[in-house]
Every structure is written in C-alpha cells, then in structure tokens.
Length: 498
Image 1 (cartoon, rainbow, N blue to C red):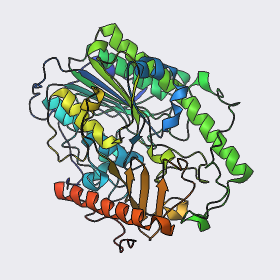
Image 2: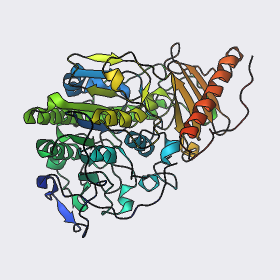
Image 3: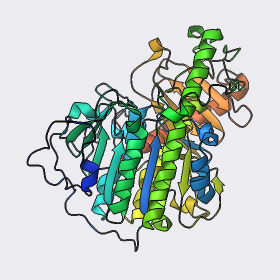
Image 4: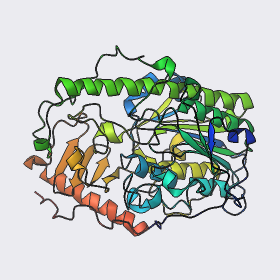
C-alpha cells in the first residue's frame, strides 16, 4: 500500500525557463525561501539511446465519442498515430483517475478513492514515486501545466511534488476556473485577470509552448487544462458555437424503461426540463473542447518549430467521461460506458497513417508506457502494462478484463451510485454494489446497456463466472501489493451456479 500522509515541504528545482515564471496577473506571495532543488537525487540517464520526448495532454470529463469535434486532434494526432477504441478509466472520477495515470495503479493501491475525504484528494496521494520522479531520474526534463489533483491547494503553495523540473499547477478551488484562475509557478502564486486574453486553456498552451521551445531534451510535458469540465466555459470565439446542434438521443437517452436497473426506484424521467439541461451541458462542453483542440494544434506546431516532432510521442486522453442523459443520468462516477470510456490517441514517430487498436486498455497503462519509452522501470508494483508493443503493432499477449471501481463516498443520496467494484471484459460488464445491487450487460448485443441480465436465470452460470473472476483479479492485485481495501465490495455470497 502506498503511504498516505500529508507531505511537508519538498525541494524545488531551478526553473527550466525563466519566461514561464513571469507574472502575468497579480502575484500572491513570494518564492519559497531555502528551497532550491526538488529532483529525486541527481538527474539520471536513460538506458535508451535517443529517448523520445513525451507530451501528455489530459482533458477533463471528456467522453470517448467527442473526437469528431476536434479537427486538429484528428489531423495532427489521429492521422499519424493509434486510436484506442476501448480505453477505460478504472475509477470514473477526477482525482482517483489522475492518481492512476501518474502511477499505473488502481485506486485501491494509490489510496486515492475519492476527490475529497480521508481517502481522497491530493492529501491521500503519496507523490514521492510517480511518472515524474521516474522520468526525472532517467534524465528527463519534466513539466506540469494545469490541473494536478483535487485538493492540491490545501497542501500549501510551497508543496511542489518531487520530480517536476517546471511546476505550473492550478492552485485555487474550484480548480476548473476558465478565467481568474491562480497558477502555482514553482511555489510562486499568480492570479490571472478575468479577460479574454487570459483564458485558462490558452495560457497553459502558451506556457507549454515556452517549455517545449527551450527545455533540455528529452522532456516530458504533462498538460492538463480544465476543458470541458462543468461548468464549461467556451473561449470567446466559441461561445454559442453549438447552440443549434441537434440533441443526441441514443436508445439509452432518458431511458424509457429502467425497471431492470437496481436503482430504478430512485429515478424519474428527465422530462422537458432535464432534457433541456442535458442539451445545454452537451453544447457547452463541446464548445469548450474547441479551444482545447486549437491548443493541441499550437503544441504540435511548437514541436515542429523546434524540429523535435519526429522524436516526440504525443498522447491525448481524458480522466473520465460524462453522461448526457443516458439512463436518465447527468453525471459521472457510474460504471456505464459513457462515464468510464474516454478518448486515447497516441501519435508516434514511426506511425505514418491512422491506425486503430481494439485491445482493452486503461488509464493504469499510461505510466508503464511512458516508463518503457523512457528506458526506465517503474519502482512501484504496476497494475497496468506498457502499450508500447501495441503501438508497434506487435502480436502481444494482452488482458481480457480489468477492474472498475468506486470505493469513495456513498453518493446515492445525490443521485450517484453507492460503492461498487466491477469487472469489465472485452464483452461483458459485471458490477457488484456494496448494498447488494448487481448489474450485468452483454456489450456486444446490448452496447447501450438497456437490459440488465443480472436477474435473468438464463445467465446464472455467466454471472457466477464473472463474479469469481472479479474476486480472482482483485485478489491477485492485492497479492502484488497490499490494498487499501483488501477485499472487493461487497463481500456477499457469490451467485449460485447452474
């Protein structure tokens, strides 16, 4: 188990580029006196000859089915890389998911189970061993630009996590402020004006471009803007862009019959008011994505301008999805496809045309992927595995299932789920809720998850096999490394066999 404790001051590194640290708005506070170095020992050397630069762009609450609204991503990344069509987050909530991206571990190993509380937020995360420390020790120049973890401001402005050469983190709650936001530039706080010239996504792209322009190679840039997290705010030129967009009405939208859902007694149809709300949320999120897409283009152009694009891996993903009225829900956290399935596109120097990959991959796979690309080995027991063989088109043994979990607060009283642990395979979704609810879907025959098979006697054997496999996978995970929650929730009797 990763130790969960509030970290004190850690050492700061000299800024890679002085231009990043120029105050654009009102400076709040001085630098952190006596803090001169925050690297993990001396920067090391990668074991790989000519290691690639890595740029990781992580959006916030973006569904998998939204890449049609991102022409730069399609032209600059998809056309020169691999799009993973079955990419999932193992906990569909911001902080637990981001902790998994940083470590390659499930939430029941990172200890970050929620955005807040004793097992949630930045205070629950042990940041002494992450992809930043691993790559820094391998000789990389590392920079973060944007959202780190929920609750980060509570750690204090002088808490700059280990491994980051350049630190530019959102540092005022709520973290998702598109104007008037505060950035922590290596321990020095800067609040940006509330004007069109200082739209958060554009500011972060500018800082990232400066970093790319002058950071010693190899470098790792982690770019994490707020888009399209609610309340989504579009850039000035994009306000109202999708006001006439027709509603999306898949079969699961405002689902007519939810009697198969174990929570159906607490659900009502969206009705006209709820449907209008779903449409407004969808329109505003898509409009917000437009600025992010332009800034992806700016970042790729910065790589071209320096002449390093041909030795750079560019990764685009999101921390979780969001439900736009499917199953009558306007939220995330639930284990449904719209909540857990997100985009993943990886541009590589060796890919000259668009490719797709349908392996079952997850956010826990990104950290080991970055480590292998950098020629280093993660010092943590990894739940994920490197995607490098898949990126190279190799015939490589791969997983057939993974865990999806929500082990934070019981948010049922707010229209969310109670705690659950589930098994997601390449075909089935099986979920065990703490209160005894069960859900089972055949995603091949029922991709919109309209018919819960958990109570269908014809699927009793399948139900038992999936339940046994879930407990087996969870147990194996806890054997690799002690779990914060050592057994799956709930611990009820397995369903009987045929």
